[in-house]
Image (cartoon, rainbow, N blue to C red; front, top):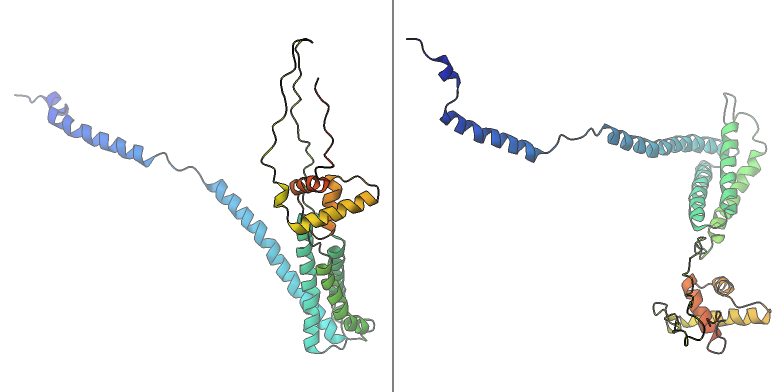
Length: 281
């Protein structure tokens, strides 16, 4: 009797029952695992480029600093300076250039003049470059120092004056940044009713209670504002918010734009109200 092969290949009910949960668990596991992670090669490449862009200038600056430092020391020692003084001169030249760069970045953010730190940077770079040129070549530093003797003798005093000027010329209170974008104010309401139809409705703008009151001003700031207003009046100049704020800052006080408006109202007082706009009829 020939066995029925078809009946052996077809899974029975028990096999189907056991296979269905296994497939369901496999599909559930794939759903929980989520999609395959995306390729992060571009992100890693971007981080590497940013890291190299930040590290390479620092490495280059350290190498240049070391070379110039040794050359300035050798020239100072060749010009007759003691060894300890030659090392200090080399330190002053390189650190003066570094301090000038830091001061330039600070003043650029504050919007203040850069003339003095740029002059100090040019002096430090010029001294370092001249020392590098003098110490270059196999026969360098073998002859008579010549002009380098008085230069190295006067350099400590010049370096001290330039670096002290960085601190002395730094503004105490940088001017606050003002926005150049004009603020748009809503157009006044137009009364489109025919004449003789009764008085117009009250369209008085509500008072802004968020503005700080004059009582919140410090006493010294209020006194300075009144002194500035008196000076402007004596000179025949109008007492405006800009002129008042400029005069108060020149007297060593901080005064923002909002505080200048409050100070202007306090200086004018109830006897000098600001000019009102046109009346709607």
